[in-house]
Length: 83
Image 1 (cartoon, rainbow, N blue to C red):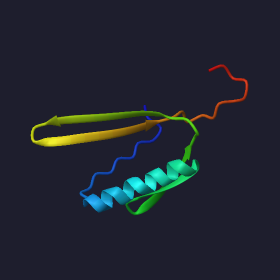
Image 2 (cartoon, rainbow, N blue to C red; image 1 turned 180 degrees about the vertical axis):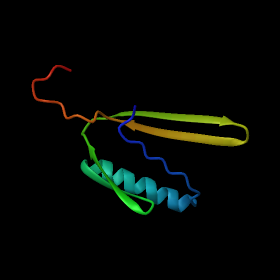
Image 3 (cartoon, rainbow, N blue to C red; image 1 turned 120 degrees about the horizontal axis):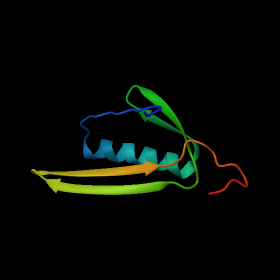
């Protein structure tokens, strides 16, 4: 079971999508606690220095679908903890 799941679907112009991705990139660049404006609210996420990524592109049925996935653990690693 997931602790939290947030999903938002919307139609955006190319420029609006670029602005949203730029805001995410800026939050990732600064690390620490990233503030992301999502619709009517703001979500704060702790972003570590290292994370896992996955990019998936599917072409079919007259559409292109691109998914960009970022993953990192919710717990902070303790100094001296086994990896």
